Length: 442
Image 1 (cartoon, one colour):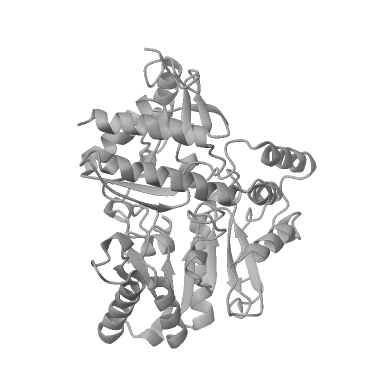
Image 2: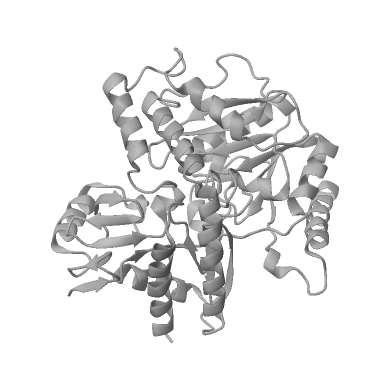
């Protein structure tokens, strides 16, 4: 089989998986944990920009960027150069015990781009290795600062898979099945989808009503507000299906938190670093959180994450938290270079421009086939809800066979989270393949 599309950019020269990939997969499956649950028989060998080439020479257009990680694309020269330069000087020192190179510089940059708001006093940053670790640290800090134990999260939310983070996660039963008991005192509310705003009602009014109604119900019945440490939410749900909440929802939650002395934790692991057209997605609603969790797009592939708290909240004492590799020199170097690229190359603006183009074209496609029932998102964080789970899976697989990498999300959606460097030509290529695959299923 040989398929070449759009000026040799997508190039599928072998059956998938090809012979080298198949041999590698056999080796892998003999010794690695079955818990990983891979979705593609893909063995990448190299990547450049928005493109990935496998061990058999097949080239794919990457529309999920390593699960929304590679914000500046695969192997951006500035990120590669920063990693190489740091690796020649110092790889590891042990962050909890010394002043690691790059740690302060990265924390300074994160404070510079933090959401503005009414709270004064500045921010403090703790660097980690992953989003899950960032959420765990934020939970500890919230409990310490408030002296309270209970948490409020949302159905459909994903916050990680370690014990504390998993207690907040509520996107898929398989992620929790068999791992209980988890942390007690977590209440899950419904995360509203702005597409469900009742006809004739102003979206911001409905959004506020949804927040006020749900919080009032639990405060009156199961969850005394004076016992709640924090509300934890993704500004736009990721694993839950790329769900965008209505205007007014987060504004009301912020007011409720202030009223009852509850912290607001924004999990920006998937939504942060320009993906939605702003550094942090919560900024779309003019809301300033108390704690922000981050990872993924911060460094375009080198493991680094962190959480940022208002200084008035970060009151825990010395040595109350730590991380051997958190804020390691290479991770800090990669993140600093990555953030600079996002800024210098106008990638937040590009995310909005290309995202608006894709959203408009997928909405037109939804008029052509009942298989696509909803199109939503912000910037280059786009959710495509299909008629059923089988359609989503078949669409993803069909795109893979035609050389475009996507991922499912939620019960029956595809998610698109390409690198923020995506060009219009690349957007057109990806959309063209996805359109052909979906219409070919009718």
